[in-house]
Image (cartoon, rainbow, N blue to C red; front, side):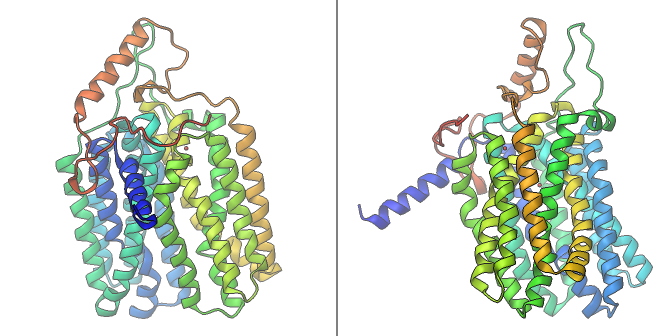
Length: 469
């Protein structure tokens, strides 16, 4: 076999092993994510719609975008509570149906006050589904496959965004209203897909030794979880750094004399690298120590943005910077989401994921303000120095915080029950796990309905070395 043939065969084997062994429900959820992102329009072109199409001022457009982000902050927690109380499936249905209706309405309303209010509602509705998606994914995927599942979901998010951004550009030239209505239709299709194909996955509350159900996990429980809230704080630092790719980077490139198309090429490199590298990198990281992965990825994102300080007028240096922090993004996103699952009890996953998701919504609000103040007052070089410092602090924090991290156990519903002895508690956990297994199909499938090949347990990846939609 030729070298090219060997490489092609190796790539096919890597893809096959990357998608094998995951349950059917995961692939329907994955498809829902992809369809949702393929229909994305509002978040990408909202500012252009308000300024160029409607003729509003940049300050008004900024206010509307901030209200959109504020809605996401509120609904991140609200969606997590709903996912635990109502269930994952009802939360997804409510969130996606509400998003479809509100997006269509946003394209139709004309009054500036109405636009601002509806934009906030769109932000609330669209962000409410994220904790439910992540919690459902954790419910239906085995612990040893979760990092791989979260990686595949993140890959779908970026693939869908890349395609939708290109399509939205052409649609906007024809009609912004078509874009709004198109996103509404695609989002409603996701709701229908969830209704038809996805059963409820929320686990029942485990029972204590006395036979009584353990108390509900409230937001107070989450806030009192010191280790988890420390992880949330570190995740917030990482989110602030990553958001500079959409705020500080275009400002700095503009000051250096680069055009908007140059910035577009830099961000396109980010998307291309994620689409190309996410699956093969996942094979390397999926069984490795999350402490090391998060420490290294934190340093990479900090110093990746830090390299921008030396870019000057070199587009090649900007490309190198984007490449470094994109690799960090590929490693950090699924590992961090898997860690949140690992630190949360099964019947409280929605709230824990909601708290984690909220950090990114808050970072979305604060990052533009921080970038503007630092660049205006001190220069872009200070922004990149601060990014490197925050990455270092986060890396050291993860290294210190994640010592003696408890191992994940099989079956998936064992988490959160550590410390119980054998006997009644173990028997109940085993019965609960058996019930979940019976709800899943015996034969997993791959994307687009193709039967997955490879080991049913997802074997074939790297041996264990020792983590977000």
